[in-house]
Image (tube, rainbow, N blue to C red):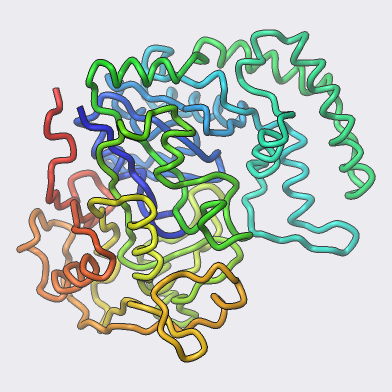
Length: 435
């Protein structure tokens, strides 16, 4: 048995969708354990591109089991639309190959309205974090405050209506009083809930039992995280973070796997750095090189289409994720995007008020002041997308990979040299005992 977690080591968008899809070939179960539809995973299979937001990336393998676990917050309308879109493209989705946790919290219409209103500002006070406006933060707020509704609540619509009516007493006071918006109606939400019951209830179950049973059978389980460590609610660049924990600790909490049962952690690191939304970004490139990386790497949000901010690889950030999450190997993605640059840089550490530091400061004012100290490498030429082993790569690319591993403290386990499944150099077997 191998239970493997796939974690983003930067600010998300590291290419988890492709890597999870690739590794699913030897996994038995794929579990999404946190986040919501604020994250998107793009998969390229042949001439087909799939953008997934809630459904686990393993769904393209119909013989595998995909699980949306209790740590995820679910927008039922988005999930239904995604399932129907995949089915229309020939992807098999049944209650046998997709399980959804009865404990997963529901993103309701007022969550989305509140999220968007806060980003726009109230009474001239702007509280812009750079969220996607999908309601993820407000849904997690209600979960923590013990007033959220869960997918299992859809089994009793009378009780569900009572809970919605109670919730709207507070939400409508906020919407009308603070934001000057229209009050929301319980009946319209109940009408939507009737559709959710019809289309989702067959998939809703006790996913903790499903995962535990798979572990007891010594099946290989692949845990798929959303976003990245620097967006972690506790360990990221707070408050410019997400509302959940995209770290390995969240596998135990969000999926229900005992911590001792997690065998391996694969940390995804893009060969450069990107981030979406507000917040500090020490190695950001506000020049032609940054623009080139964005265009060649197609750095536009899968969920929102927003252009991503791009910069050099930050080893301080990745090193912190490796230590925090127990990363034992790296998946280096988008190495091909750097091809053709005359020189490539990695920030090995920072200077803060003239003093060397090798950690990410918790203080945003300190982080805004740090100066990244770079190591510079010769660039490499040529198309590397057909490379099948490290020796196929140009010398400059190999030197860059070696130094990256040294700086962050973990060896490369795979290197992605293009968007498609077969454009990958595999350096280790992540499921050596697969059945």
